[in-house]
Each structure stands twice: as structure tokens, then as C-alpha cells.
Image (cartoon, rainbow over all chains, first blue to last red; front, top):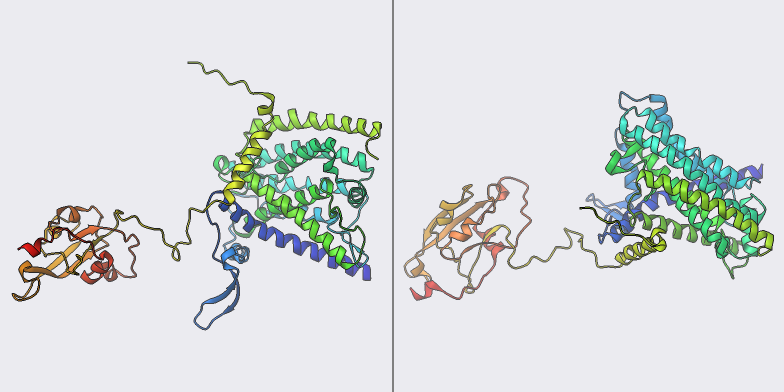
Length: 353
Length: 166
């Protein structure tokens, strides 16, 4: 009974933290994009604390627009939830949920800390961790394809088509790029990946893991529909892509799904390549303080990667569709396959123990 | 004409150096001085020759330079200017000037910022100058009277001082 309660508490915490990061990463994105473009960005809305008698509000952090995510959420909720007459209602309603659900479920198997008071800081430590991640993450494409299909109009349809082609081709590169890691770790459990990295160096420190790291990074950009691979959305070409017909909270769900996917991809990258919650010179086992430190280390790495995602978005232009396919099938796929052989050779020679 | 495509080296075809230099450029922009302002609190510095809304100016002795000749009123294409002239008393300090505007209204809802008033003014009393934010809550508030125009205009020293020599 107690174990179930602890599990529920962990699930609630993970969900809460992920959605919180999701809300604020949107603000960070707007702010960083403004800075990169020499603008100031959102700098007005603070968190409302108290309303004075004259109607003005006492707010917190207005200069940093800390209340902006809150107000965006209110705006989305209060907008009219419009469903066009020409859509397939059932799938139209289902699509945003399907987009959001896999992104959140991925966090179930990600170790975000070592332990806290003897409780392992992972919701479900399944033996097939990485397989679970890929199985669930590839469901995410259904949300987008379904949105494009059910909208019953051309731009969303084209967006959906693009996304299905893109996600399926990059899924392969993503899967192949991490195979070498599990050959080295000899386990599919994500906790044992982190444990291996606490005993050895981080996986990215070995030169033969640089190429998979790069392929994984680029493929996860494609998987999360982020620029330079945001072809399903492509505002300039498709007027917004698969979510053209969506408004209010349903649109916000797609928006959140994109950012949740981004957080999931970053969390996975941190776990697989950047040592998870471990950091050299920080003890692996210890009391509550060490446990909290591990969670903070994980979050710090996560934020660094999220910043990188945002940074890249405002640097690179979008790929053309044929370039995208060429990069996926003709460059990344052979490289990832070759890398499996290279790492197999490295293991055979005995450079990794 | 046929253009030769430049032959890319392996390093260029890898894209990575270009991507890294692009990332470095955007990162450097994060710390640069921002070009936008928090507008109503921070206002941009308007250069002295900025051609904004028409205003009336005083000379360095605080005299209203306008002599109510009404040329601007006649030349104004949208008829935004209305002047009611008045005579100075005989023994007043600026009695020689004879005329001065009792009322000088510019309807800023009609003004088209053409600058004919400035061009036609023989006394250099009306100028298109700094004020750029022309707002009001009613049509009446958008009719700027003499006091408001003088306040917006401030003083503009004039080396000629025609009225002293009369």
C-alpha cells in the first residue's frame, strides 16, 4: 500500500515538474529568441500576488515576465473552442491528446536522480527502458498524422504527410545511433546506463560515441519537429501545418506536446550520453543532500540541453524536404550502421570494459 | 550565362563548421545591447531635426514668434489650423509687432504632417518638430490649442530678431 502511494506521489511530482518546465521553457524560448534577435522579449507580466483597492496588482518578477506562462494558459482556456464543420470530430478531438500522451509517458522510465531516503528516483525501472521509450515516443506521430488527416483540409494534410515520413525515417537513425551505447553497457535498463557511467566516464567522453551522439542529437531535433527540421509546421510553406484548424486549448496541447517532446528528448540524451544524474567528484551514494544534489545535476544538464535546442532553432534555417530525407537516409543511416560495427570492433579489442 | 557551382571541400560539406560559427554568432548576440525599448517607460532619443507634429516656438526672450499673419491657415491643405488674431496694445513691450494670435488651434485629427505651414511661415514661428506620440481620448482633446502647441514647441533661438529693428 505504502509503495503504491509513494509511486503515485512520484508520478504526480514528475508530471508537475515536467509541465512546469514545459510552461516556462516557452517563456525561456521567447526570451532567448528575443535576445538573439537583439530584442527584449516579454518583460511585463509578473505573477499576481495581491490586488490593491484601486485595482492595480502587486506582481512578482514582472521584469522577467514570470507570469507570462500563467496568462498564456488563461488565454488558451478562455478562448472559444472552435471546431470547424468539415472535420472528423472524433479524430479531431483525439489528436491533441495523442500528441501529448506519449511525450509525458516517456518520463516514466527516465532516472532523474539516484535515490531520496532509499526510494529510487525513477517512476518505473523497467528492464526494457530504452525499448519502452522508443515504442511510446513513436506513437507521438499518430497525434500529428491524425490531426492532419481529421482536419480535412490541404495544409494540415500536407503537414501530417510530411511528419509521418520525417518521423519514421529519423526514428530509424535514432534507434541505430543508441545501439552502440547498449552494446557497451550490456543492458537496456536506463538506470544501469547511468550506473555504468558513474563507474566509467560519461558515454560521450569516448571518441567512438561522438558520432552516435551527433546523430542522436540531430535525429531528436527531427523527432521533436524543431527547427531546422520543423517541416510538419513550416509556417511559411504550410501556414502552420498540421495544426492550422486548431484553436484555443487544443492548439495549446500541440504546442505543449512539442515542448514536452523536447524535454523528453533532452532528458533521454542526458541519461544516455551525459551521465544522467552523475557528476565527477559528487558522491554516488549518500543521504538526502546527495540525493537532492543528483536531481539538481540532472535538471541542470536538462536545462543546458533545452537551451541548446532553443539556441539552434534561432540559428539555423529550415531544411528542404528532399535535403531532410537525403540527410536521414543517405547520411545518418549508413553512418549509424557503420558505427555499430566500429563500436563492436572497439569492444572486441577490449578498449571498453 | 552558366554559373559554375563552387566545389565544396569535405569540411564545408560536413556543415558542422558553418553550424558552429552560426551558433557562435547568435550566442554573441545574446549579450549585445538591445535595440528595443520598454516603450512608455523608456522613450527613444529624438534627433533635433526630427519632423514630427507641427508646434509653435518662442524665441529666447519668451516671445511668441507667431504674428498671426494666417498664411499657414490659408495654405493648410486639410484646413487643420484655425487662428484668431489679436492686436498688441500700443504701449506694450512688443507693440511694434502689432499682431499676435489670441487663439491658435491645430486639429491633429485633420493634420496630414505635410509641413506647408512651416514652409510658408515668414516669421519661422511654426515648425514640425520632436513630438511624435499624438494621442487623445476624445476628438476635442485632439484639437491642440496655443498653450499646448507652445509647450510642445519650447524655445528656438532666432538670430535675426526682426521685431527689434522695426
